[in-house]
Length: 491
Image (tube, rainbow, N blue to C red):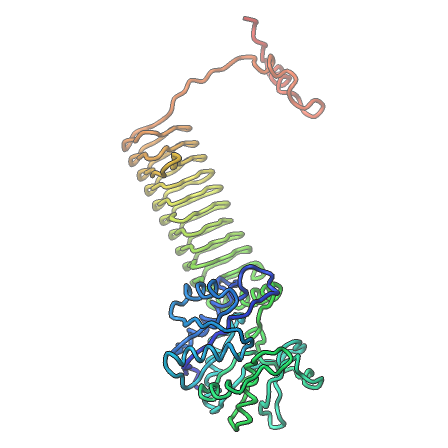
């Protein structure tokens, strides 16, 4: 079977209101796995390299159209009119494409709320349709409790004779477990001809695309069905419960693909990865990891536990522990966390460290540089091999503008330093603990802030005699007196 055939056109139906979502967001724009449902549908269709691709919209038309075009600017947006039903949606879609140039060959119809449908399955459908010389081929699957799905009616020879909507089905037809997925391959000429005869004479008063099959068969055209085993591929989401179920199934599929490609995922039940994420082999993901957006993870890196990375680049052999990050780069062999926060524009060099309870924003941290703990680094350049002491703050904002601080290569900055930008510390410089750096520090210099310490003997005995927790622990005054402290003499 040739599974590389491309359709002449794909029409994605995305006009429904989706009231059961109970949301101000259009149903097809609800997301799983890093994309909205309609983005998944468009991506699967585009993967087939169709000559033309249309998305039919109606409910919150402008919002859906803008969303789709932002994802794929080459899509043709088509408005469905007042006539309801999937048949009408396909009809307006085909008419719009015909207005550009008449469509011939195979037309594929899919849905904007069926996000797990694989391009490989669509290729199989097209190949089956064309090699069998069908006029209509419907994608089907078997469900034990088919509920509101349309039923596939076959004759004794196994040929598809009709698709009956559940609300119009007889008791015998409701017993059928083979269901209509709503996904079709049509011969364009037969589709165009049959749509002219589709009416709204049914329980719902809608033009059903399902009627095309029976009309085509009545005219002697060949109609058939391709049944697939994975029901989740054709499952739609009408409410948030179904959306969550599809999200879990999609995530399982993504995780399995990565594991088979050489990624160790210790706890698949608690690991979530978007379809847009790239992971090389020999990466280890520990429990509680979430990878989103355009994140890429290179060979040998270890992520987690409990880390969420969005639009991040993690280079080979890096280690990221209990960290949130987005829009940043973690260099080869670098270590981050635990409890670190990386913000956009941050780049850690090779073997650099951003440690416990540290935050970095729009900062370049050089190869081998270390910011071990309890520090905020904003709008800074940290030279290679520099060491920033605990509790350091880069004061980058004066209330009007943000300015930059530069720390030179191999500088040694003491704990609890404050760097008031703009300021530059030269290569190899030192600073003392608690230094307030307001002026540039030359290379190799020592900067410190000197203040006098004043000590008042006996202050506790005089001013805090009753402090502490009586009956629980000795008071500070008692402890001081036991250590030989004396009350100050009256002045």
